Amino acid sequence: MADDGYPAEDYLRPKLQDLISDGVRAGFPQDEVIAVLISLLDEGPEEDGEMR
Image (cartoon, rainbow, N blue to C red; front, side):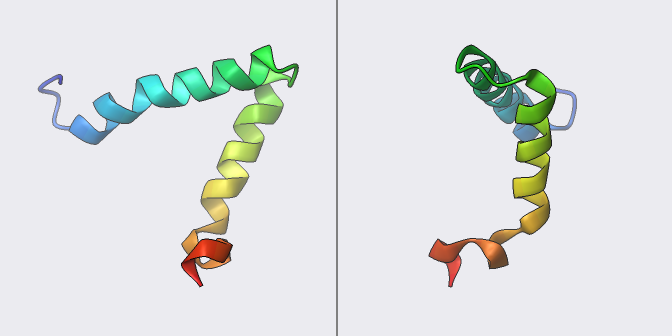
């Protein structure tokens, strides 16, 4: 991991990039994939059925 002070970002960035790439390969526009990911994050865990 890089020593930039953000080890979680270093860990998550390649996984997020892969997830976006997978969505694009599945036929979704990149901006739509990103918008859905943001929406999912904005909902938070209280909206997640598994967290209830």
